[in-house]
Image (cartoon, rainbow, N blue to C red):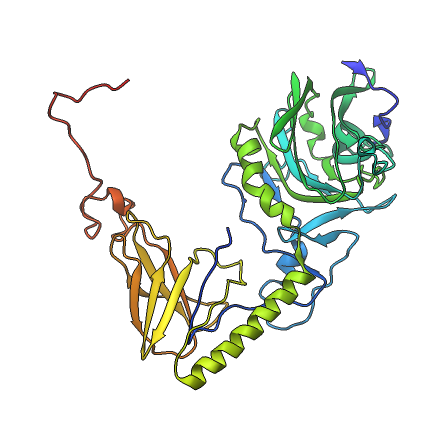
Length: 427
């Protein structure tokens, strides 16, 4: 390892919304609030094995399910509305540190020897290399692992951005003081989200940015078990609340092993488009209000004339499994068509008289490939939903490979090739 250069602060101080088209006799979807920006519904966790997921959604969770309209007080110096609930906000020259303990009484939160820390970061500044700004103006910590040691924290390793915002460094505690492990040049613009993953081991370190390998370097020391209880992973600053990154953090995950393409490239590809949206804007909220007003007007005209249809795109992103429907009401029947249904899947038609739904009642279990349903209109206001019903008999075998989907005693379909004997090999 080489000794840390003068850029380095002294270490010793250191888990798809879809569209719904509705017609007469169906009034759809609640509209978001009237704040200048609102948090989007938090994303579900990516399907992978993690030590810990920190989504920074404490304000969202505090307000979820409230029966009154009393607002949740959000400290803007800690949280800010984001594309997945709330994000951690780190701005200024000094903040109250926020950190994860390395270990609790029953499990590791941060791997002590070999592991990975992955998170999204959005700078409030431009890299100097973009000729639009001068970076965070200080050595901004992204994440830093340190232990309490009398008055001075002992830093095991630190991932941070240079003062001009053009380089990301990883440094660690060496035998003779701080040393650099790796570095990667970056060209970041304010308000763009980037996925950062720092993987570490005693022999080597890796830095992935936006799903791509950006740098490989030397290893970092493992944390002694006797000091694990005093060690914390601080996000967006050092353990003393200085060295601020001046940006926002989202969806921080820790892992007990090195990640593969699923955790780097595929995850970035799957989430980056949502991250680019940011929080719900005032323009979106106003557009939703206009849509809802137009819907009510069309509904009133339709009911007065004894018929007619109207349409509205879904304004509610928090209901999973809602498919693109076309509903026509004729007389006392509703004719429901699932658009884009697959022939090798079955679908269930659900109903709720209100949103948010306390329970979705199953109106009909469709046959294989059925995309049309006819239901008597027993309610003048209600909400239809179609979901995949892949396993009619509940035996754990999908319908398309179940020899008899209506009989739980009949298992998966099997194919035997009798001629030629035992089949053949295809190259």
